[in-house]
Length: 147
Image 1 (cartoon, rainbow, N blue to C red):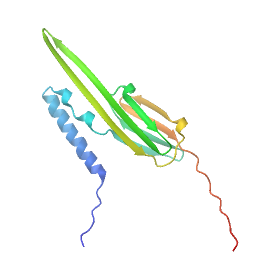
Image 2 (spheres, one colour; image 1 turned 180 degrees about the vertical axis):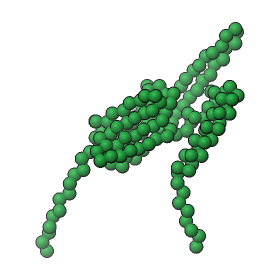
Image 3 (spheres, rainbow, N blue to C red; image 1 turned 60 degrees about the vertical axis):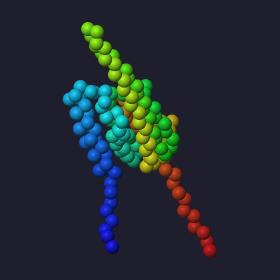
Image 4 (cartoon, rainbow, N blue to C red; image 1 turned 45 degrees about the vertical axis):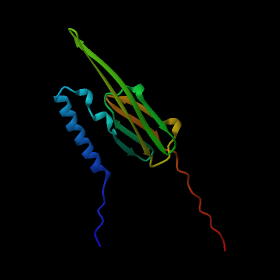
C-alpha cells in the first residue's frame, strides 16, 4: 500500500508569492506597472493567540483605509478589500491613463470566541492589525450522580 503524503497549503502560498514577485518585476521592467499581479492574490495574514487575546496582522500595502471592510462575529473574521485607482500622467500632448482594480476577501476561523464589542483595528504602513480580546471560558461543574 502506498504511503500517504501530507500536503500543506503553505507550499502553494510560497509558490504564489514567488510567481507574483517574478511577474511584478517583469511588468515593472517593461514600464507596465498597471499590470502588477500583487493585488490579485490573497494578502499574507498572521494569527497570534495568547491566553487572553487574538491578534491578526495582514500585509496589504498601498490600500486606502476607506477601502478596507472588516466583518466579524464571535468565531469568524472576514477582511474585504475593494480598491479602484485612476492615474493620469503626461505632458506635451501625451496623456496616459491607468486604471487599477484590486479586490480580495479572506475569511479566518478564529480559534476561540471573542468579545466582538471590544475589537480594535488599525492600519499603518501597509499593515492591518486587528486585536480581539477573548471571551472568558465558562467553567464546567462536575456533578456526582448517585446510582
